[in-house]
Image (cartoon, rainbow, N blue to C red; front, side, top):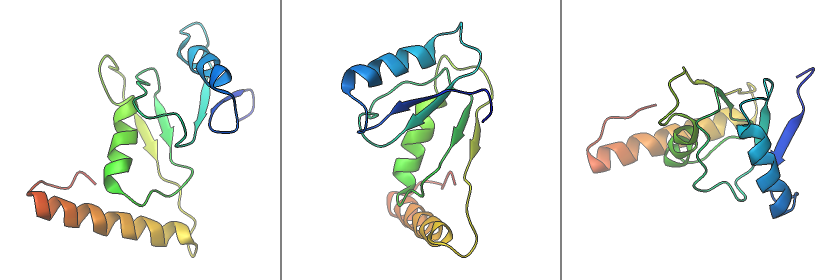
Length: 117
């Protein structure tokens, strides 16, 4: 992450700073942008300017995962979106990922949809 200045949108920063960080992230004049999000205050965000998404925390719900991915993979984003799911073998990361996968498959069977994961 050398040369990148992270912009944080989380409960640790004020709502004014969150708004300012989002504006900085969306500024097309900035070539290197890194936005760090938590679940606080990011509901309904449209982040079509993003190209990469890294899930730093495990998500228990496949639905929540899809919703987060949908924040960057939407119109007018015409570029390829690259999504990373780093997992550390032998930790809770892999266990939580398995739980989320099972929950997603159960929900898909219940509502009669194909799994996207």
